[in-house]
Length: 139
Image (cartoon, rainbow, N blue to C red; front, top):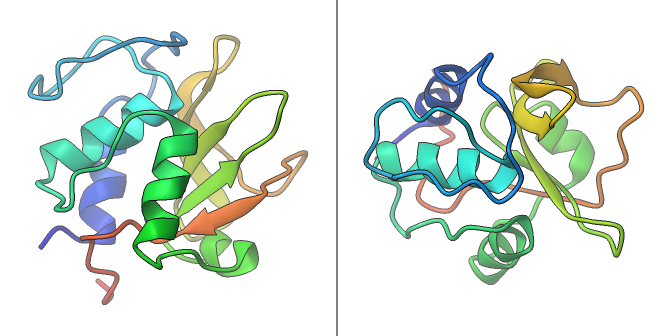
């Protein structure tokens, strides 16, 4: 079973790549050229063999986690490596992967690309979850 560390390390492989909204990667490509927020999560989960399969789209990823009873409090997610942080709103949806140390690895937007960012400063998360099919048992 893939671990929280596997997911984070896989996402880190795309650090520095551009964010392109709606970009569809070949999930089997070991090093895609770009991603958007949910595609980064879906790709990392696919690459690591997460079962059940993670869907595309932040709202669908949130619902997937909710349907698997994997929602957790936002403050806990910020402290949990590999947890997902969601912003679900009429203005747009977003997902990031918590690194457990107050930062994220995420495809944040076209002005930011894929990288590490604060999980708290200027952020307004609305939900958080563990990824179903990922082992959060520790290092």
